[in-house]
Image (cartoon, one colour):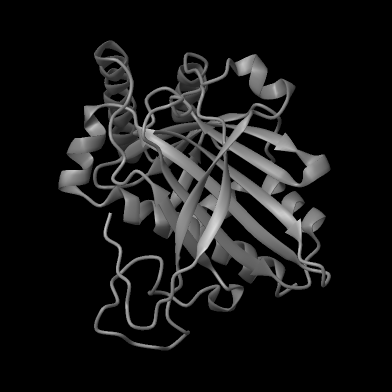
Length: 285
């Protein structure tokens, strides 16, 4: 992952909670919150809107100004780049899932999606189990933040849960199978058009009482990890969105991908677009 500290950037420390590194059984995900660990992250603040710097790079800190007034920022910590974790047998197992799902993603691109692709995706997802970070192994951490002024947390959470297709499409990602509102324990593939095309499987756990959405990767995702979206009251009638991300490599394919592409920067770009979509859609209402 490339990180640039430009003359316009500043650094501070922030204590961040992340979802449990242990991979719980699927039933445990539905029963309650996972334990959490903490780490200290270094915060990288992007340049002011419209500022130009010789040190700036394409990615989440500069680029399209959609959502520019949402105060989007992020912090990174832990172990970068993410390294493949688990036994050799487990890494080979994950790699086999990744290969099969990449072939399915390529087929989906050729077929243009549709009900047959959705039916295949539903059947395949039933085979996949949660693939959260392995406890004690080096873990990459990211803390994304943004602001939704004038939008109550309950409204922001409800929009995210009720419109996942639009939320992820803002980052160029389709859901397979096509999904309306999220439900507890829902499993989907996040289809990245690539190249190369990727089907990244995830499951969702919903906490309406705390306006929180948990996302856990499933078998065959290039990264084993968790994302926790927390829609917090900002004290002024709006929402502060905190997104805690923890991830590791799932197989040798992770290392290959890091050499050929820049998947971590792409990950930042995806979440920047998601935060921008929530701001541009909800604040303008």
